[in-house]
Image (cartoon, rainbow, N blue to C red; front, side, top):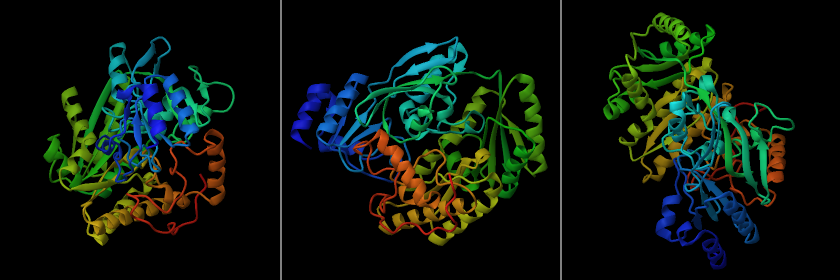
Length: 479
């Protein structure tokens, strides 16, 4: 670490605002992915002015600057791949304003996702995006990755709920994009910024939409002896024009792992379950529930349960949202992927996941957003065994390649980061990537903001799995 830069950082933020000892930095070389990368130091700004000054120092010393929320990301996006300064927003965690009449909130990036909903629940409002890590992840991190969640099916991902941003660009300029109005004139720079994974700038303030809590919510658990029957149910619900607020699926192995941990009431002998939720006006919900139950029964659900009360509903969702934690009790490590496919390809894709599991001798559990085709195969392995690690990565790559082959994409909500950058050529041509790079360079001309992310390299997955660019099983699809 540059001693002069370290001294300047401590002068700006105070001794308690800078971490540089090796034992402290160990905590920041991880996120929720299998990647690792250690920063030179970690800083904790308390204001936008602090962030502006951090950019001035980073540019002066030509040092990378990487933003970090809670570190729950699953693609290595918040890791300092090339060293430098991690900027943690843990101390910029205030809700700055709530506009009840217009259903808006202004927050700092370190506000925890679920804390915002809790703060406005008494007003009959909530913040709709709900990643499974919502009790820990921050809104700034959600903006960076354009995070989704179980209720994406009806409510959309983060970008659908962000109206305006204050950010510091790679040039050190403080800018504001968008407005509290539903639409604002000019280019949609807010839209292009959300999901840029910290490569355009660091967000210091976010204006979001709040929406009314629904009058009624019903959560249904459909139990199946066949994965095909469950996936056909999802396709039929969509074909009938029914849009649940959530439609989640777990396979039999994952059901058992979750039930042993959470005791959510999932049947241990089921091959698959669907967790379906409908919300809205009471009459609409009752009507939709009848149709959903009819479709489930028509496609051979052996049992259809409706949560009797809020406690039972919360327990079902606790099972779904703690699936990754449940798997973590079983194996030393797991690798979670994030492919997207058309809903009609669910049966074929799950069969392919089974083939890949058998090929490499690795257990793969399936838990995913069935309603929008966003898969999360969980590959269990022992990270102490390099062969298992390499096989886990190969297995993941084969699954993602198949997703692309059937008309899908390499990520739905986890982001590209340093995990999938080498896979970008599966869906983008060289011309596509060149255009993206031109846009990147406008915001981040010196390349100091979160370097080594998104654009293809030959490395990733712990930086030990090095290989050529992946072979395409199908021509690149235009974005």
